[in-house]
Image (tube, rainbow, N blue to C red; front, side, top):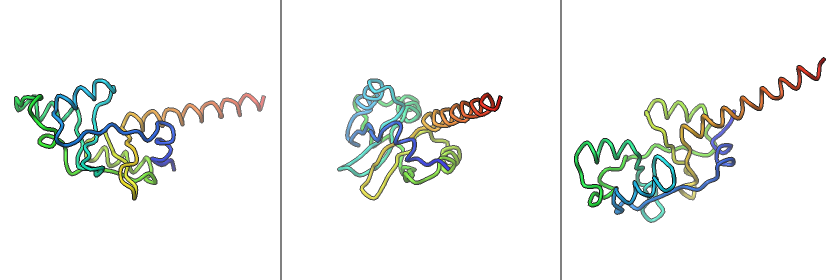
Length: 144
């Protein structure tokens, strides 16, 4: 079974983070610049929350909050659901589906070790299927 470590090996362990005292406007601009749908909220290197596009819609826009004055800590999702690098992709998909989340920070004994998204899992599954198809085709055509 494939693990989260396989995804991190392919995509890297970089994580975009913000401090809990940053404004929603700053976090949203950072997400736009990076082309991502969420940022991990850390305080002194400790994982304290996650802030996503969904949080912006539900807790900022829908509540008519000022994004330039609202701090991330007031609208982030907490507690954070996370996983370990040794977790299987099947386990992660089950957690993401059950909790209806798309971002899953990866933690190890030293703290934040990366992040995977539902898109990362899907891309990995597609790569694996393409690899299997390629090898099956080679096997079939080599038998002729």
